[in-house]
Image (tube, rainbow, N blue to C red; front, side):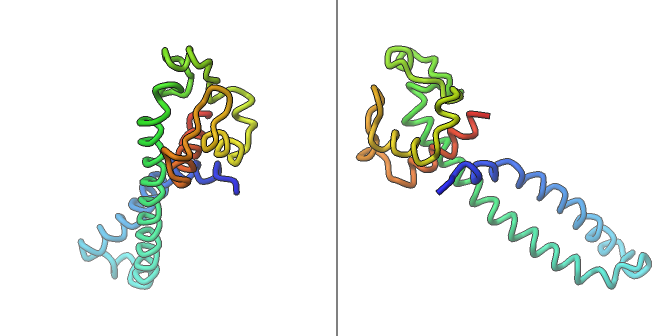
Length: 151
């Protein structure tokens, strides 16, 4: 199961909602000012309503995705940042002592999500296992967040 594609959903939602609000905003402005009939918009009002419903659905699902990504960031900050650093560089006293690889190293970028999940769950090298400290969902959330640090 590839998780890295999900991480990409953390960014575009705002752009989609902004553009949708511009499109819907123009229709709402004309309706509010009474220009809908004069501008020939009465036929497009039903389409605008349908579009607004789609925008609302994207907004709700986007909020869930944002919360999903935020959850990974919060867990990373609480459990991983002490060794891997806020930027994933591993440039912390603990990271230097443990010789933590930077998260943007070629080896970690090449690693599959499953490999990173296994390393986090079971431990690898000097990195301790987190199977008893984090749920499987929290570990997956962290890996999604780590992929955003690798860009």
